[in-house]
Image (cartoon, rainbow, N blue to C red; front, top):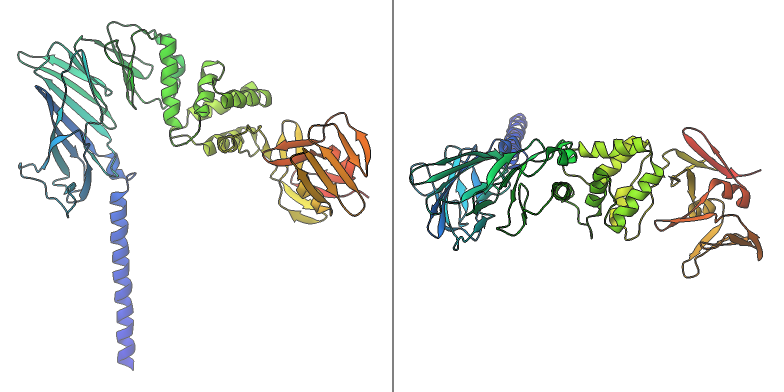
Length: 474
């Protein structure tokens, strides 16, 4: 029996050790495959592009990978003659039956492929042209283009231009910057390259933009630097870091376009029927009217219920947010500034009808000595109590008849009838006129102010900094 106990004890110790080792290995593997891990932040790529008649020949090296790790390559359909080769020129080791799973060698993967191009004419745009790795982000990219076919023109990219060298038989273009590769653009008519302090570089016939025209853009802390081609040789194009615009564009129109580009990307994770969120921030930034119906309503509401200083603080805090924006983040910023919790932006993103700006009362709600769920809200200077819940606390039955826009409130002794569209109410068949409507309909609920609950229903409401006390008046 003693030996059996000893054996059992040793078995348990070994099992725990093995389980711990397996867990550690799984955690390590999970960290390696996490697209937000430090590995992704150190991964770089270099792309060499050679012009050859009616095709582009591309050599791509991705470095900074984990040596021996298996990666899945995503190969666009437009790429031909795709190969993965090791540093010695031999084919990469493919893993499994899937065609694009490769094991890195010395922390690198090397790809080569060709991109067919039609007759260039006056311009050529090549987008979505590189191989990417699943769940892996690129921190830095370098692109080198060697032109030997159409040397009269010039190549452009969303990455900043590092150099352009003309030699006897070739022209050489070099681009480098943070992030992934962008589209490549070639134009027969050469353009000059200009750098600005407003967050973008541009290619144009001449220097056409005044720095002062882009004050709003220059104040955005996280405006991602991009390149703009100003030309009449190609239709307009827009991607994350590369934009083509018509040469007739003005400085003000370009700033509007850049702001639209910026905020649409900031709100890219949201699926809205219309991009009224971007509209709100663009309009406020430029001091102009919003263009969408919901955007106009939101700005009007905020202007009516917030001071100029509060508005400036709100929009400045949002401009300083480095990551993608959500309605929850906007509501958190609004809550921090106003000192009261709100879901203004979130509710409006989910509702077909406009929801006014209101705040939740987070104090304790005590009804007849018992704590209840607090659904009291602030709207402007008004404190609104949910009518149905409040009246039911005191034994009333509440019914809303939407067809008649009528609310019935009844107990064994009294019957009240209120109208959403009339300043009267009926008590046991007697009509009473009011100077204003005591009901407020908002987001599918009906509310009543404290003063009407007191004068009509004799309900006493006392408040402190931490509590709301409700009881029947003596």
